Amino acid sequence: MRTPLLTLALVLSATTGVAGAQSLSAAKALFDQGKWQDAASMAAALNTSDGLAAAAEYTTAGAGISDADDKKALFQKAQDYAKKAISLNANNAEAYFEMARAQGRLAQFAGVFESLGLAKEMKRNLDRAIELNPRLAGAYVALGLWNATLDSGGVKGAIAKSQTGADKRKVNDYFKKAISLEPNNPTHRIEWVNALQTMNVLNQGNNKKFAIDQLTAALAMPATTFWDKRQAAEARATMDKLR
Image (cartoon, rainbow, N blue to C red; front, side, top):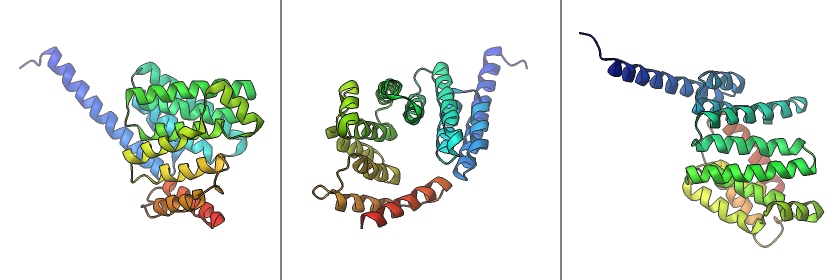
């Protein structure tokens, strides 16, 4: 019996989708082992929006542990992956989030005016990510760090605040939102402490005790991947300095 063309097309589409999901899962497994280059290549080769967003994530993470001379190019590559992911699916919240994350890292290598421009683009991309997926916890963490970094005091902080609208009074609410969505994700608590450090408020009120409590809670959570273990080691070092 001949298979109708439409039915055949649906079968092929479903098969391709399953294969793509399996490949993306395999890429994630490589990333969890710390093999971020292989993971990014595998994810990007899928040439799908989700695959390219994952490639952007893996490349940004890899850049963070790469040699200083390689970082900028890798962050740019992550940004390119995210741009392509958005071009393939303008409603992919993760792609906008990864674009923002890469832009935040690139701002470290830019001059004052260019970095402020990137900061504004980063905010727009994070807002878009949340608009598309209000439960994307990482985007709230990024917004918390965004406000903490750009409204961190001093002359530079005052200029950044006036140009971007950043407001450190919003920081805690963003982190509370992220933790309410993902209470068992240690990253959110660790980044909250990083935000408090950025704003230089750890010696105010009960902030130091609060920070130690957040790090203690984070370290009580399982650290199974290469990245989890690195993060846990950094959190322990931070806690030792605070005590």
